Structure formats: structure tokens, C-alpha cells
Image (tube, rainbow, N blue to C red; front, side):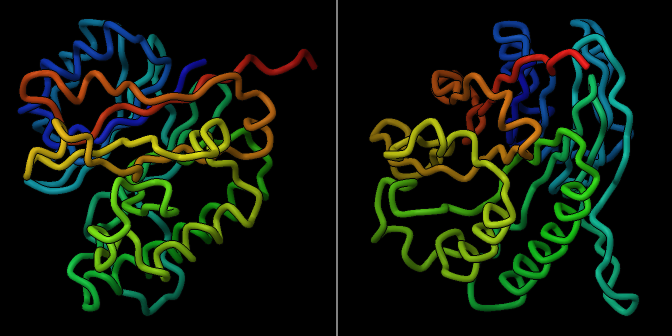
Length: 265
């Protein structure tokens, strides 16, 4: 079973590239972020033509997430992150969607960027990560094979960016962002790409500006976190780097993990 994440940066603008990737690599599950469309504008019929069923959580012009599954309907289990306290303001941004596919819980997320920091956007990022932490603890307690994946907007370590200096003031590298990310790993979740690439140097994002792609000035912010039940079944993980270089591509590229079937009962 191959499970992938892809920040598509506007599903209407990138649809030809997205369909190419799906047909060429054929992931079992594909999680999308930044679809940037309201629910009624999601092109579900285009995915149906190539055999994918979809659920989605859209928002006009911004954010938005979706889960595609090859030949089966994703069974939705959660839309949006639960609030931690009764007096917390309702979160109106479409950033989280969760479903069951072939016995695996898929949690697709688009974590807030947080820039500029400090400020309200950074505070929102940290509060959102606190809510994510709580939801991941719930998933952990259920002992369901789970992968939490998507654009985390966190560069975990210095080895995950082309330039520590260039990113020093960015919300993606701040100690608070990194601490929140490592609290997830501290609970026992496995970072699939980091586990198989411990020396780093693996990028998932290259900015459109300043020739970042041509100069390979990228960093790693798209992650796949596996529960123990899935980490034991991981056989491969990688980045489909070449898709970033295609015409009218997203500024992200797909990231994936492959897991074996569960052992017989």
C-alpha cells in the first residue's frame, strides 16, 4: 500500500500535473493540500475517470484538503480538528480531514504557515499544533494503524533546509514550531522520510522565487508520521522530485511511504 501527500497549490491550476502524477505513480491513497476551491468546485469527476474516489474539505481561494483512494471510497472519520476548550473560537479554516482506507486511518493536514512571526498568525499556528497533538493522542489510544501526513510547515532540523541562515527568522524554523513537532515524535510517531534519510538533504518544497528550483534551494516541510502499527510495516519512503520540475508545477512535490499488508490474524 502506497500512501502519498502532495501540496498541489491550487487544484484547478495544477490538475493536468496532478492527473499525470496519479497515473504515472498510482498511489493507493493521495492526500492533497491547498486545493484552494470551495466544495462545489472540486473536480471529483476527473479523478473518477482514472479510478480514484475522493472526499474533500474546501475553502474559497485558500487552504483546503482532500483524500483520494484508488478504487475505494474513503470513509470519513473527522473533518476539522476538535476544539480543546468550550470557549475556544471556532476554526473556520479548512485544514484537516481524516478517513479510513483499507484498514488504515489517514489524517491529511495543512498546518498553518505562521508568518510573519511573532504575531497572531504565529500564535494561530502554535494553537493549531496543540489541537493536532491532542487529536494524535486520541488516534494513538485507539491503536488503529494510522498515518498523519501533509504539509506541516515545519522544518524539523538544520539538515532539512538548504540554508539555516536564510530561514533563521521564518516561522517554519522557530524553536516553538520545532518543539511542537518534536512533541509529536516524542509520543512515539515515526517520521518516515527522516527515518530512512537520517543525514537529511531531502527537500519537498522549492520556492517559485529567486531560482530556488534551479539552484536546488529547498527544504523539507511535507511529512508522513506513522503510528507503531504502521512503522513496523514500512518498507520504503521517498520524494517524487522530478514532478517539481514539470511545466506549471506546484512549488511542492509528492512525498510517499510504502507499507506492507498486515500479518495474518
